[in-house]
Length: 112
Length: 112
DNA sequence: TTTCGTTATGTTTGTATATATATAACGATT
DNA sequence: AATCGTTATATATATACAAACATAACGAAA
Image 1 (cartoon, rainbow over the protein chains, first blue to last red):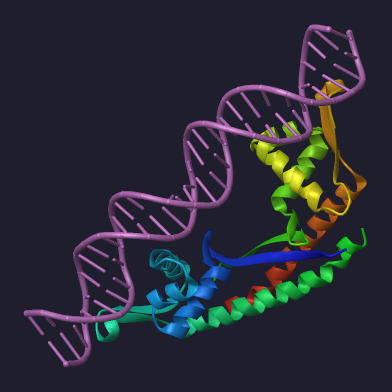
Image 2 (cartoon, helix red, strand yellow; image 1 turned 90 degrees about the vertical axis):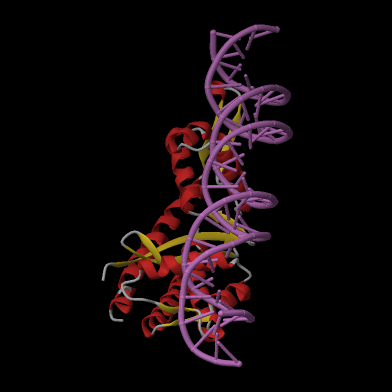
């Protein structure tokens, strides 16, 4: 029996989605590129979609996850706060643990 | 911090989705009503959608999950096999365990 | 003060998905 | 053989979502 258990986890704050896999991916891309528009390009999603996600994240989070600047040298940019970086690490850790946990549960299906 | 960790799990077989929350919901409704059309009505989804889901389930599963009959007394119907019933129980068990596991992981976010 | 690439936002277009509608096949019961 | 409610399937319509396009605002630096 080659069944697999897959999962998607996400963090909510007051019934609003804060972080999921896609949002974490976006934050990582912002951290690497220093810019929301470059992050969107690297993920092959529209700038508008990326902006909407980031806006939703920052509105849901207790503390700012990024600091965005308009104009100036290079036109502006976006960078993660320490809080944002810590959230990413926590999410990845929990997600990985969840995968491992579910792998252990597989035998319950194989025994049927 | 009232963050919550939510999850969706599903079982795949050879890269095809076998069971998720919606599909399990459908199977339970079939078990209660004895009919695919009645199950669809009880879930407020179209018969076609319900049929497509059930068809996908039975094509992905190693053994039949339902036995469907056309014509005859009452026009026909659908009922779960023992294998189907066992799969539902296993899915619910694993899903519940996953929720409890993730609840324990919450402190990792609260400590940030 | 002009330039530049970025953030921020609205509007239009396109696509994928869900819904609605229609119809055939079926078989026990009458 | 006529009836009935179901399964099974196709087609057309509607809706939700994503993508594409366009444009304003911004501020450091030249």
